[in-house]
Image 1 (cartoon, rainbow, N blue to C red):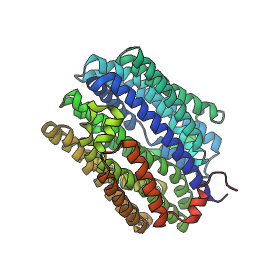
Image 2: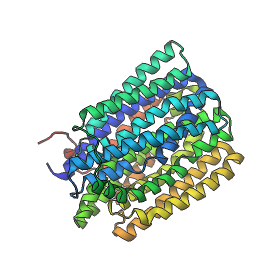
Image 3: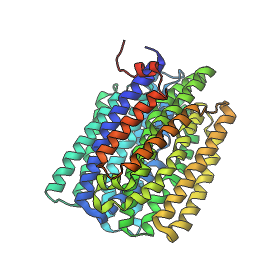
Image 4: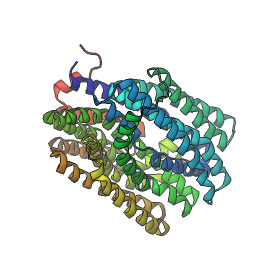
Length: 470
């Protein structure tokens, strides 16, 4: 099987898995929003926003660095995997077990502080999953990750239904979230090759050398990516936090698509670059860009037109007001896309140190922006600063990556996708009074047929998308 075919099949399987898990996740959010109400969902959004900030702050780039190193021939794969797992396990317990106690310094209600204590366990699981996922990425076996995620989501829905039906309340709902994460991690651990805790001085030193520039970059990423969700609850009512958090749940789905694709492509980029396969490197970099654009542009256009109906459908009529903030936040996705592609590209070519200044300056500018505009304009101020920060990082990463790799994306496919997505938006706008599920189905059919007519997908590409075809 050709590498390109493996990429397409792995992407398709993972995309199908992501669609299923996303639908299950939206179902869980729908249960939670309707069960908890606006204010208590605001508590949940505050708690998870705080923990997500800590999670990214303590991420250290383990997923991308692990995938990058596992794709190289420098060390025995089993020993490298064991060392990566050992370091991630220790750092997760140490940092994500202790840092959540800093919530006690914030003037939040006691329910939010207890929620942080409960959900912190799920974030430790998420951190441990990073090494498992990186290993699966390098082996192009991400279907196992998809299965594990779906298992976790099913447990989450069943638990949320039980809590909602019996009116158990806010904290038991938080416990269900943590329980679901244990099922997800347990499945990945079960499906992984035999693991043992191992510390090799030479391997650990290589991991540290590879990781520290990425770790610093990720820390500053945390500041400009999650700073709004940490600072916002200090200046606005919990109802606004709930709207902002609910809108971000939809935005996170789009961001996960970016992360999924680049997780698949980064080991291939690193493989080609480390072996001086210039043409393969540029081909895979262009494929990364085109795949992201093919999926993201229609999603962004559709969400922009249908923001209010989407929020009402997902979270209930009480959250329809979140549609306005979602329409603003969704614009930042284009910056996210450029940041994802060229940030991972910089990692693949070992230029993490050269892009550090971008994340550092973005973090400083974003914090200044949040502190100025959130007190004045609330969640809208946070959203506009988010747009600035994403575009700032994305554009500068593009320029820097081009300087070192000499790769600059071709935009021919991008323009065709944009044209088709705009036409789809016109269709959605004229039919916007129809039920949301009908609109999503029609837009998906319109985009697929249009993509075939404009030859966005070649015939060979479509054939290669058929899993397990010999």
